[in-house]
Image (cartoon, rainbow, N blue to C red; front, top):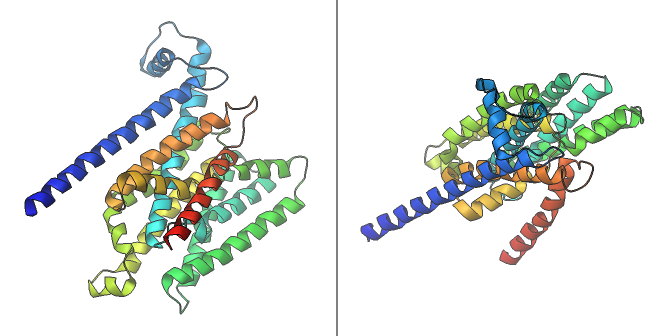
Length: 345
């Protein structure tokens, strides 16, 4: 019996390694494909040569290829990878913490708070870096406010977080609506609306580097502690009997997920459905163990958003907002999840 168990576990490990290898190859393939997609396609050879120019290469190469590679395509592709991975990992973490496959970090108001911060900065004519900073600060502040209020509640922590998060989300959305109402419809309102739709058009290497720092920190924390997310799927009374401080772990993961979500939103705007849809797809491939689910979600999310960005900038003559494309893909998936849960019940 013990031998059969070991063989089964070894088989699962081999399967998981193959899944991770496959997802990694899909991610790399999507990134390479993205250099070719666009008004000025770059061949694989041009991509390699443009990259080598920073290492002293001076061979035959179109001058515009170097500019397109370093100033447009590379920061945009890296941003899509990091945003997709961050949103997917944050979504998977929240689904484990709240023991609900239909929740996402939005439930604590991070996206609404970031939207309010960005809208306020745009209203005041701030430069792009200050808009990013305001969005990041707004997202962090919204989640912190939700968490601090929930600690004063007599209800369970999960219920309190959901209720306070809904309240904060409503307040932030009301603030965004008020800012849009008083904005100049010929200039400021258009900027706010475009930002809220989500896009990587204005992404450059400087903005990517700034946002990559909190995303890297958040990803590192969750990847290092990912097996503990399995503990958060337990009931609080059961966890206490085992001597597990489930509230401490929940706070750590809320902080890490908020860093991921706030940084992703401040870099690319509101890009919906990724944090809800991708964890389910990764779960179907890697299983329910978060020790395996988190890395799978990160790679699948990065590859997915890169491909969605390719569609956004190539399907029509003008570029579609990335948030619109992901919503078109995500809404039917959400309906499928609801129907699937209904059938199980």
